[in-house]
Image (tube, helix red, strand yellow):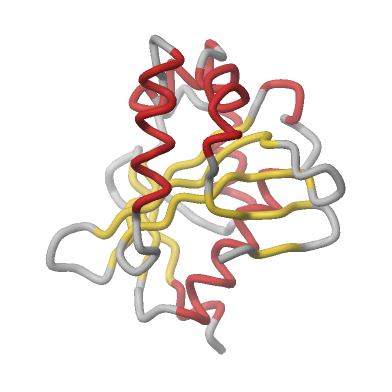
Length: 162
């Protein structure tokens, strides 16, 4: 499923994304804050992308974030269902040269709107390091406060269903 706005496109990954994904995953901040996205070798990046391609978009959602006008991969949104819940554990990252340009906020809003309207999940769960100032800013912009644990934030999808 592809979701598009004037600036951002969310689409399933393809094998053509391997090199761009590999480059983004090697960014120091991505490695620090989203370590499971880090792939030490291009072949492991390719295996990871192959895994993302095989998911059915029912319980797991793996989107390539692209610029709408060029289809250039600039980041990712990765979400999977926490067992026996209606909660999606959600993470995201974007290439350094695209940070601070509102691409991530636009991509997250598209993703949130889609998940709220097209699924029966209740919450998105974000785990954010207290040292990740950019992601903390995104949590603030989404209107989220920590959930008693300074690293866990929940976004109620009911906010987008009304």
